[in-house]
Length: 339
Image (cartoon, rainbow, N blue to C red):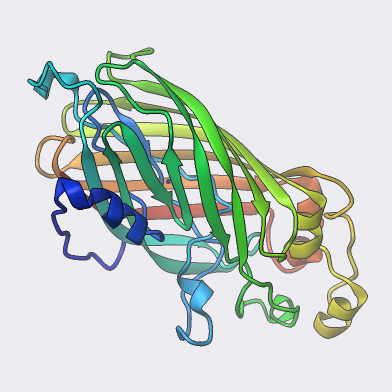
């Protein structure tokens, strides 16, 4: 959600927008739709900054285990004078900033990580990235539409514990391989719910399967979020979600076999991989403030915080119970530009 190393933002011509989005696979950004606010998320990592690109390239990737929600509104219908247009307005937005999160999923050590994001729409089709997720909504959004159904493919990279970590015992456990996950997302968003004609209430579900042979399992993440403009300059959003994991996921990331126990000094543990389980609950709060005076265009400051609590089977893992913490906090902030 879901903004550091502020980059020079560049303008992209309409004919090049799709190519630009596909090329920006590791990016994600705030929406700039026309009729109503659209959710924008910062995806927080479970890993931190690398000591070197060659040694730990995954340190620069944002892990997909986090359901983040930094929400930004899009342009409203009162600035749209094209009554003949069928599909919602084309747009693109970019953002950059910094995230602070746990060193790994379940750690009590902290790391800072730069984050970059891109999001857009072309001819009614929406494209977005959330950290290392890339997704395309195959259901076109019509101009003036108040109920927006979403469905499409998603590709994700998971980089948790792919390099060294700060805790000396956990660092002695075998490194994990980068997981390539593919799946689908679906959901629905209603515009004009409680506070105004522009607030949004949404539900989404993401289901992924590892196709790289790393953890060899699946994940599912239902999320509900709500966002509302406070004025033409300010916006606030809240969210709640849970992450559900298959047996192979828990076994790969949280169980410790005898060899790992001997190397690290942590006790043997097999509880996380016994059955599918809820691995984490999260709640988040985020906001945006337009430096230009209008959230629909120009530079926007964004920021947010998320609290997560690991489920019992994962919290009982020695990498959490003995070497980390079941309480997981994420903080992020930065600058976005919408055009």
